[in-house]
Amino acid sequence: MAAEPGRHLPSLASRLRKVLRFTAIYGPGRTLFKAAARLRLRVPALGGVMRQRDVGLIGCGQFAFATIGYFLHRRSAHRVLACHDIDPAAGTSLARSLGVPVVAGDAGALLATPGLKAVYVASNHASHAAYAAQALAHGLDAHVEKPVAVSFGQLVQLERARRASRGRLVAGYNRPFSAAVRELRRRVVIDPAGGFSMQCFVAGHVLGAGHWYRQPEEGTRICGNVGHWLDLWIHVLAWRGLPERVQITLAWADERERDDNLAITLASERGDIAGIMLSARAEPFEGINESIQIQHGHTLCKIDDFRRMTLWQGEQVWRHRYWPKDVGHAGAVLQLFADDGVRDWAEVEVSTLLMLHIAQMVREGLRESSFSISQARADLAQAVASS
Ligand SMILES: NC(=O)c1ccc[n+]([C@@H]2O[C@H](COP(=O)([O-])OP(=O)(O)OC[C@H]3O[C@@H](n4cnc5c(N)ncnc54)[C@H](O)[C@@H]3O)[C@@H](O)[C@H]2O)c1
Image (cartoon, rainbow, N blue to C red; front, side, top):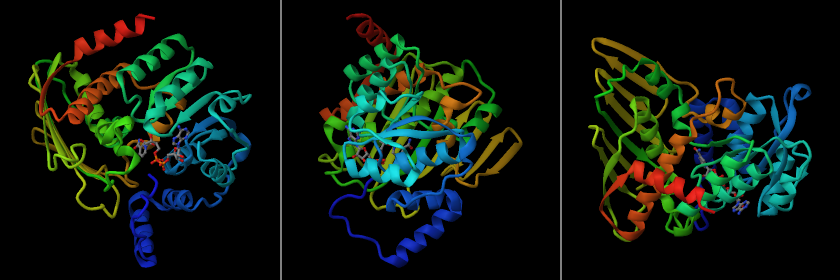
């Protein structure tokens, strides 16, 4: 995420401390990549002979460089062939740092680059759906960062493009790909009649009211951040089968900034209950910090910032440590190239519909609402079918 204008710069000592702390959390390679992304330093190319240059990148900011760039360049056989950013300096600096041969002046030129097979979209939120739809219309695979859409109309456009294309569409929602959530999936014994309880406390970045994530046309922080835990909830519920209806209540700390420091409760007719709290009262030095607890039947798990997980099942207990911290970015970024296939798009569609509903509640200041999953899906299908 780009630094906000007007925010004071940390001292050199504080920056060095951050590098040390990040090294302890993410390992040296990823930390170096994160620093290189901030400073737009050149990163050495490794194992070039076997690599295929067949990926396009739209949006060349911090996430595109430090996360997509890292996992593609360090953990896959694929490299970025062409990139584009509306800020030419962002495009050229990423290209120089990662050795990307083509810097395209617009998305059309990028998509016309010979040899392209997949396109990553990591630009501003309001542009995601249209760029991904364009890539799909070219018959390319598209990886679209979260949120996949910031309005119902955009989701319709994206879904039409997905159905008409031979290309695959995947989303950047990464929590379902984390080692902790995958381990929980392996261990949990599904009770078809039982509910899930889930609690997420998230200490997020401080984003001033002027930050682009917060803008209504960009979907507010609900689409920018909260969508992650709504998507995780839908993913977990899908293990048993989704409910039909969700009762939603919202509470916020400040009426003037309803998309920040807010609590969401969710309850379904199948006995599911969830609480998501986004708290951003001070900048977390080690980055976003998440405490997640999930209970279903005899299984209880506590995920501590995707660095540790304890899982109980009756009298059994498993304790895991994840180093480097594994929030699922590797699995999400590389899903187009994974042997075990891509995530079921239907889950992403439902979590997006729920997210859009809650974003609308926040915009309108509505504290309670009922959301029908089947009705929302039917409305989407009807809108996609009508020309
Ligand atoms: N999955 C995750 O965990 C995760 C984490 C952080 C960010 N992200 C996503 O990555 C994307 C980028 O976030 P970031 O933190 O790098 O932000 P950033 O502000 O650092 O980068 C955004 C880049 O997009 C460019 N851009 C803006 N509008 C554009 C447009 N219409 N066309 C082309 N380029 C455009 C900007 O110039 C900038 O270089 C966002 O979608 C964000 O939600 C995902």
